[in-house]
Image (tube, rainbow, N blue to C red; front, side, top):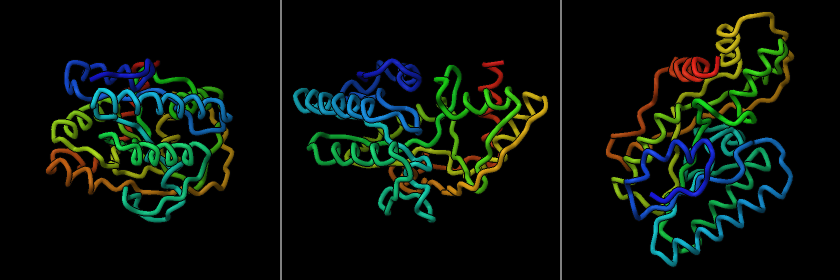
Length: 246
């Protein structure tokens, strides 16, 4: 596998570096869901166009990473399905959906993976869990009442990618997630319990409840992937990150 990028996801994909020689994974670009301005989005789009041309010239499969977060599925009010309607909630969601369209219409062989919140050691400071850890340590956190998050360990994501590629899946959009919608308050509770200390909570009504469907992932892999994780899986994932960070 050819891996474009040097960040968190790219580093974890390195274990597949000697496998899937026909695949180019674009693991670079915008990785924060907040407002970053237009320049980073434009740079990612330009890199995607270059990568598409490279894949076309060399007859390679493009592996592109999109999002299965609330930025994509938070406005549906229904299980987030790859073939269902989506109403992106943020500029990040709109951007990823637009790039998905570019990939699908490019004519190159491709696989688009919509990833939920991928957690692991050495994550960038601007991503969800490091931000939350910093807030809890500061003693003040903003709680989005009614919001939820689907989190998955990067160590569980990489084998799923391997399984999809071994199965020859292409020209598809596929969710990769735990399948468990965890209320944001429970995630905060768990981090706070692990770190300890007083915590002031400021509640904000920002409803974004969603459920990521894994039906397609299961079908495409013959049941080898796409099984929902346990309801307490998120605790194990967070504990692994905290053990590495504390």
